[in-house]
Length: 125
Image (cartoon, rainbow, N blue to C red; front, top):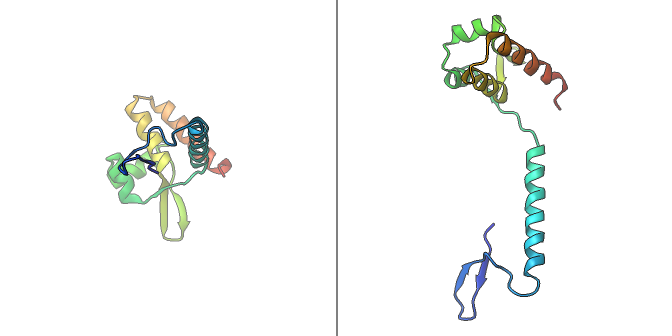
């Protein structure tokens, strides 16, 4: 949203101080509160992005065979089965593993993270 101000001569400007006058403070507070509530609601709404095998490979840099080996070793979350022939991973889980790897977490720490991520699938709504 962009607010503009019309000056007496008919020209326009970006309104960093719109509206002018005695009500400007109240208007600014209303606008700030409204935008803040919108941002809070946006944060609460959880949208889960699904990744297919090629996307996971691209984001992790692993080959497909290595991906499945890390899953079997407990170092990567198991895939989520959508139907008989379709599996996906939650993007936030892939990113969590990537962050842990970049941070230099130990194998045991990554295994614990994988367990926690998979456990959270059961309680997240």
